[in-house]
Image (cartoon, rainbow, N blue to C red; front, side, top):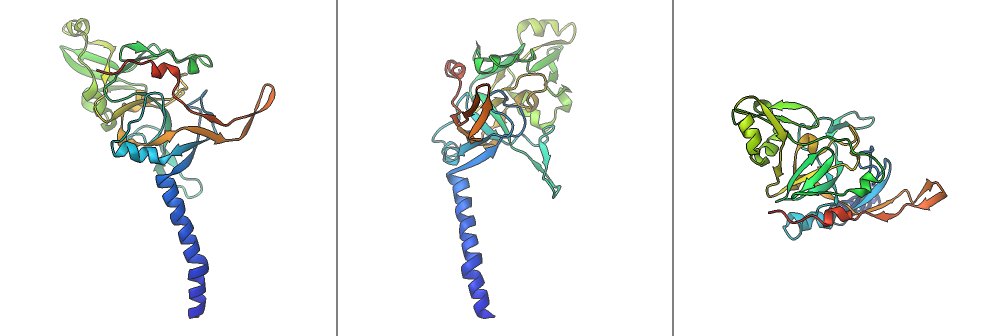
Length: 272
């Protein structure tokens, strides 16, 4: 019996344990892959594709040696309590907070807002031709902010209209990052409630993320749950590696491709 257990340990448990340890170290410190679920990053990514995520970049950011850049595609956990962020594990049935895949639109220190479907970063409208060449963004604005008698009363997001005193926890950082209202809105608020598209000044350690699918209901992102903290970002998608081939108009074509920031994000002036 002793010989049997020694054999089982050496030939099975030890080898399986070593394989699991190596897999853990690789996916934690070297790279991992993530599957795209849904169409929130269409037309850049489509449902069923898999992307490569270099994990060493995540550790470099956490140690303060580098930063995430505008235009990069992030793998992130949405804030606790975010609507529709909870998924159910197949067969076993337990719930978990799923990872989202979104584009980093603005970084700490940036001023950002969305007006009639156009994203403005540090006062510059983004010419997001990588999106608009394939679809027409829904002309929404974010964030909507209302004032009465000089005091903030409501914040309007993609998810709904929230009285300030009833803001969910995941939107409180957004409230703290809103810039003061314009003088016109402040003056009108003395007579009646007045609303405008607010401006967000991202504080240190926070990022504004959006899906590329800007059609109505196309993406749940910072327009729903506000800016996300750096620790919520698990990595950057830098390469599509699966499927190897996809069917196009002229037949099958190679699908392998890098995921570099679009030119519009490289032209943004630095935040103040």
